[in-house]
Image (tube, rainbow, N blue to C red; front, side, top):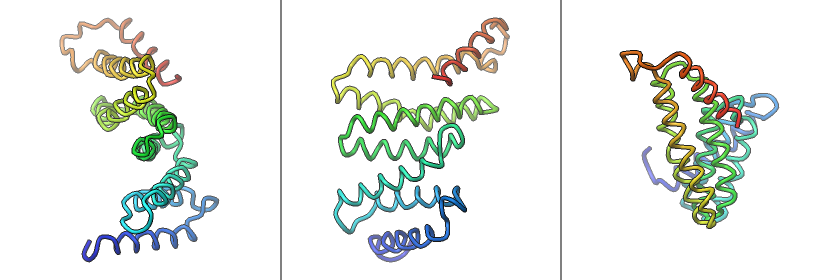
Amino acid sequence: MRGNKAENIERAIASLQVALTVYTKQDLSLKWAETQNNLAIAYGNRIKGDKAENLEMAITAFQNSLQIFTAENFPIECLTVSHNLGDLYFQKAEWQWAIKTYKIAIKAVEISCSWAITEIRRQEIISQAITVYYSIVESYINLGQIDKAIEYVALSKNRTLVELIANRDLYPKGDISPTVIQKLDRLRREITIE
């Protein structure tokens, strides 16, 4: 973008607010949710105005977006939005809210991975989400809940291990029995349900 960054952000916010008069939650819910997400990003990057107020506006817009982008219906979008929202709460040292939001992101990761057709796509999703696990662990540590932090460290490691073992392409000799693969598939489904 050319010109003054602060002015460009102000123009973007104004344009997005106008767009929300056209993209309503009732009539164009996906466009509305996308616009809310973009508005949240703009407020999060806003230079003008009170920083705390801008963050609150960003939080509200992200929350609005998550009304449509749920983990069950739009897991990839939910992952992105809830990750960003969790990071805002983290930035504000609101650990409980950060944890609650990162849990939504983790649920979206689990669902996205279960829907992924290829192992490459599953790995892309996991790599996109790895910082969510780090952040939830750090949030629990900041609350002094070390046992919960360790639980999420184990969860992230177990998820990666299950994915690696279940991927037959990593074992070209086919040394894994179908029974083990079935058990791992069952575990993957159980992880998704949790």
